[in-house]
Amino acid sequence: MSAKKLPEHLHLDTLAVRTAVAKSQFGENSEALYMTSSFVQPDAATAARRFAGEEEGYIYSRFTNPTVASMEQRLAALEGTEACIGTSSGMSAILLMCMGLLKAGDHVICSQSVFGSTIKLIAGEFGKFGVQSTFVSQTDVAHWQAAVQPNTKLLFAETPTNPLTEVCDIRALADVAHAAGALLAVDNCFCSPALQQPAKMGADLIIHSGTKYLDGQGRVIAGAICCTKKLIDEKFMPVMRSAGMSLSPFNAWIVLKGMETLSIRMRAQSDAALELAIWLEQQPKVARVYYPGLASHPQHALAMQQQSGMGGAVVSFDVVGASPEAGRANAFHVIDSTCVMSITANLGDTKTTITHPATTSHGRLTEVQRQAAGIGQGLIRVAVGLEHIDDLKADLARGIHSLS
Ligand SMILES: *Cc1c(COP(=O)(O)O)cnc(C)c1O
Image 1 (cartoon, rainbow, N blue to C red):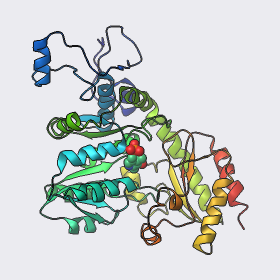
Image 2: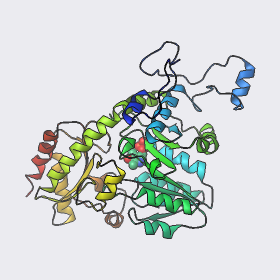
Image 3: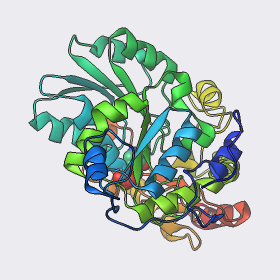
C-alpha cells in the first residue's frame, strides 16, 4: 500500500509522475506491471458479490486491471476529468464511445478534417447500423450549428487536425452541443493534455491514441476515453465487458511510464517545431507552411489560447511545383534526401518522422476528395522529435536547396 496520500492541486508535471493506484505490499517505487488475465477470489461468495458489482475487486483483465487502472487515473488527472477508460487503440476508444452512446436513428456531427479512420468508422461502419452522420467544416462554427438535428447526440472534433493543423474552437462547439442536448467529444492526440485540456473548455469526452505522444517513443498501440465516472459506469464499461476492446496491461504500463516525460517532451518538441516552421517559411522553394504557432496560421490566436501558447510538434509544408506531378516529384526528392528523419506515418515519437500524405495516409481518397481536403501533391508532414534542431534543418535543407 502507498504510505503517502498526494496533496490536492498539484501541477500537471507532478501529476504525470505521481498519479497511480496504490502500490503492492512490496513498496516498489516504479509502478508494478500486473500481467495476469484473471484475479483469484478469496471465496465463492466474494466472487459472486464482485461479479454482481456489489463489491470492489479485480475479477478479469477484460474488465479491469491494476496497471490499466494506474494509467487511467494518471491520464484522467492530466486531462482534468473525473475518470478514464483505457482501450486497445485510439480507434477502439472511438468505437467504444460510439457503441456506448449511439443507437440506430441517432445523428453525429463530425469535422470533415478528422483522422481518416474516424470518418470511415462513423460514416461507414456505424452508417451500416443506422447511425446518421454529417461532416462539416473544421473551422466554421456556423456549419456545425446548421447541421444540428433533433436526433443529434454527439459532436466529434479533432484539433489541430492532421496534416493541415486546422484548429477548431472547442468552447464554441461545446456550446453548440449542449444547446442541442448532445455531447462534445474531442480527439486530443495532437496536443495531449500537456498543451490542451479540452474538458476545461467544455468538452464532455476526450479521446486519445496512447500510441502517439502519451507513449512518446512509438512502442505500443493504446487508447483511452476521458470523461465522467457516470458515463464510464453506465455507458462504456458494459460495452467493454461484452465487446472486449480492452487495453493490455503491458501496453498500459508503457504508456503510464511514457506520461512521466510527456510535458517535458511536448515543450521541447513544440519549441523545435516552431523553429523549424519559421525556418521553412524563409525557404524560397517552400510555397506554404501549416503550423498553428506561426502568426501566418489562420487560427493562430485561437490556437495559442487553447494550446498553452504552443503550436504542437507537427509541421506541414508545400514544396513548389508547377503541376501536381512536379509537386509530387519535388516532395519525394525532399523526403528521400533526408538521412536522419524516419519515413513513416506514425507521429508522437522522439524520432522525427516525415511523410507524404497524398500517397500514404490520404492515398485512398480520390483526387477530387484530396483537393477538397486541401492535401496537395507537394505537401510534406513532419512530426518533430527530440533530435537537435540544426540536424533536422540540415536534413530538410539537403533536399529543399537542391530543388530546381
Ligand atoms: C493515430 C490517431 C488515431 C488512431 O489511434 P490508433 O492508436 O492508431 O488506433 C486517432 N486520432 C488521431 C488524431 C490519430 O493521430
